[in-house]
Image (tube, rainbow over all chains, first blue to last red; front, side, top):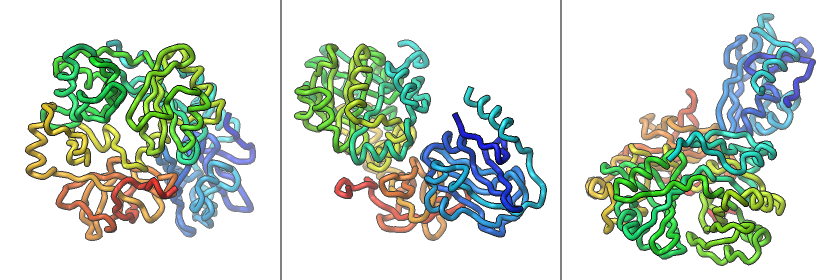
Amino acid sequence: MSEIPEDRRYTKEHEWAREDGGRIVVGITDYAQDQLGDIVFVQLPDPGTEVSAGEPLGEVESTKSVSDVYSPVSGKVIDKNVAAEKNPQIINDDPYGEGWLVSVEGGGEEGELLDAAGYRALVEGSEG
Amino acid sequence: MTAASSRATALLDLHKELGAKLTNFGGWDMPLQYEGIVSEHTAVRTAVGVFDVSHLGKLRLAGPNAADVLDRAMTADVASLQVGEAKYSLVLTEQGGCIDDVFVYRMDRDEWLVVPNAANVFAVADAIKDAGGAPVDEWDRYTILAIQGPDSFELFEKAFPRSGATDLKLHHWAPMDVFGERGFVARTGYTGERGFELYAPVETSAEAFRKLLDLGAAPVGLGARDTLRLEMGYALYGHEISLDINPLEAGLGWTLAWDSPFRGREALEKIKADGPGRKLFGVVLTDRGVPRQDYPVFDPADVEIGRVTSGNYSPSLGTGIALALGPRELAPAPGSSVRIEARGRRIPGDIVKPPFRKRDAS
């Protein structure tokens, strides 16, 4: 059963967004990393890049497949997780913590985001 | 023969118990991975792993004309195998395209077992029929367990004391009692490591599988089977070989017994004389990224020189590797630089002659 923390919101494409001091930290969910399997490559946008809600901001690739990462919000990338680029396995190990991907300074606009309960229903629908 | 969709490995419940993610291979639900492809791959390279590869076909061919049939159906000289020996072969069309690659075991004086890929069982059976044979489908008779890795000999002897398996030479097999049922064990594999393939009767194969796990073998899925074979540069049907790719292009000329009357020989003699149209080459990426089938390969002048046939992340090398096929006249020399375009990004790499993982590198 996937872990789904209450302190953040989720996209239907299995990204999470958590507010942290005015920024939005973005990553992929436990369910997403489990479905992907061993992540061996992650491509992230450089700081300064403008991203749009619902549009790809980067990609994660496992031994099995490659997936776009969709931005939960619109805004400007402030920081990216260089450690995750160097050692993508930390996304598998700790998708909600050390394995975060980027932080975005929001322009306010966001995509259709689910709360933990809504996301859990989505995931359980896929698992069931 | 019944439809492939009705087949299931005898170990399906065990795989589920072990938490395997399943994938469909030729109508069979098979384990893609258990713990993870990288750790399973590493287990086979450094210790020992056990794979269920029961989805592979099992076509038995018997009778006094079987040797002549195989001479016509198989590119390799399998008819002259001794009982107890096995050999890799291709099955071709009249035009020299590959219907499949198979392993052929001589089981008895007038009896052979042909092991095709799951997706090609019916096509190989048809090729054998075209050659005048009547293959019997024994797809459900054996569970095939591949026990592979540097510790495979020690493990096998512990699990099946005095079976004689550890005395076998490469590509030899011997009958074996598997918990009271008759099966056989072969010194074959698809990983580049030493090991065995155990043809365990379905009645007792779960017991054999459990025993191997209890003694420390890591369960390994088909995901790692693919990364392991790719590191060795082994061909996979639908990637390096296909109806559209002939053996000379795929670098499999060594499987062709030119003095035997195999189907496709005339076409290949002409291709050999003219020079094959394409050539297979290997690429090791020098920057981060994962090559995938059909990604284009460019030379330093931005000329497309081929397409990836198989690509993945190499757990042993820690970087992306690929086999690629392109026009022979454009084939890059070992050591030269290329770039593989992955989703709009061109990743630099070097041309190498497979295998990507040299055996003495461990």
